[in-house]
Length: 209
Image 1: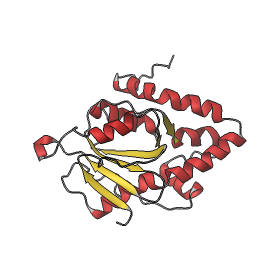
Image 2: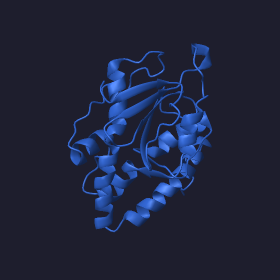
Image 3: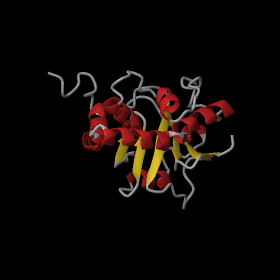
Image 4: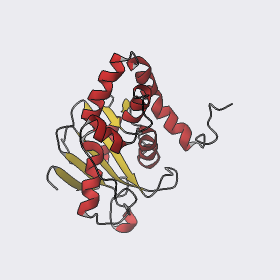
């Protein structure tokens, strides 16, 4: 697929994504404590995507030996842009031991400002705010396979290619509705929320009565 590069094990040295990098993950399931992190997708918002496939040593890979990716995640000068960052931050932290920060989450932003709809999924945001209709067909495919199909690669890339454009639009709406401050505060809490999830406070919620 044009504009998409698949890297085995780690990002190449010297690759820069600028001050705001869109990030997504693919795992073997929806439990970050249990399910293996298989792929990390990144984009600078320039129409290109870089995919890092993490392959366990038992399958001939380097496991979590990805120093360049870890350095990027830990860099306080680079903001990480997620959609439903709560899950991705937890998966990255549980596997790589790096707590991504500072962060922005388009799902939280959408829920705060698009109160006229209950459609806050990435597919909905891509269509409504970026004018792009993405396919979610590969969402439940096997991401742990040593080789990824062209369809999987295209799907994974689509999860980060449009996040910058979506965030630009959501930020305009947050400013218009005077909710950017509370959104920023919510984003700042997300890494802590992810840690609470890993400690078992997802259900029951720590904040529930």
